[in-house]
Length: 389
Image 1 (cartoon, rainbow, N blue to C red):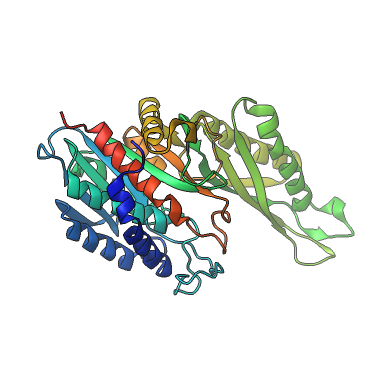
Image 2 (tube, rainbow, N blue to C red):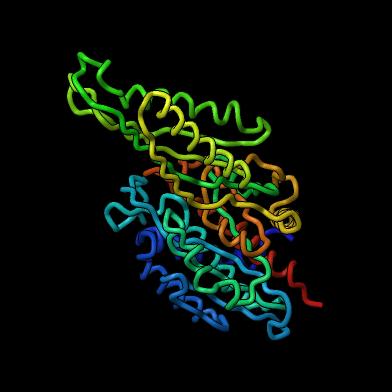
């Protein structure tokens, strides 16, 4: 089952939708034009039910199969929001909204899922129900969690959920997936150090928070190298260090901040605990104090075993088994689809974008040539997972 012929016929239409979305990027939850267009198109396709305002600006479409939708429910998800980047791609359909850009390919994801919705509504070649989810605020706004809080899974009776993301560097149209941790949990920390300020010529009368902070920065690097199992992955990065305002004054306070990335919830707990202990105890050893604030961001994106194997099989049907990498290396980037995978079994897959600029850069663009593969993958998930008997 290669790329579906009908979807190949729709390629030009879907590309035009994608270019329109690309030219009109919107941020976080403020995706009113995009969501409105998605809802209007779903209705024009004859989707059975279109729900708006889920997770503030999310859109959900319900497509019932030939048996009236009885039985299993499979959901497909795309993200709609852009990034606060000024585009320099030079494309004729480049952003018309200054300082906003589809620099992660969410325009492509949305267009592909719209294509899948059109095809599935036309053909109904399945038994059960297909749900198409168009989510706002993936880029730091936890839109998936907000949709979940609005009862997404329960309201639509979702049994399994699947998502995809384009990936530069993977050959165009190829797929890559792994069981378990696919993308990292993304956490942030800040450490407020308080010492005793004073004259730089009299350091013996001070507790220098810069010296304390320097020791903490160095010690934090040992969490991964000496505390985390070397067969598991973690990243601890201190990315800011702020203290002092004059060359002859030892400051009273200093502030560090950074990020933690992990692919396992147990490792996540371990790193947070060790980070707190390390900062607080080193500060105490110097006669200073350290207040640690730790904010957990997106969870680890965990692909369920059965659904991962199923997704890989479907991708192989579309692209050929030789063009599906199973067991691809995980990435330490984050993805809020993780919230959906915590609630329901499913899988997240990468679709190669080819030799393009990297994600989140001002010259990136989604590769329109991969549209048929992505749309066919979405559709085959439904037709294979909900077969007509």
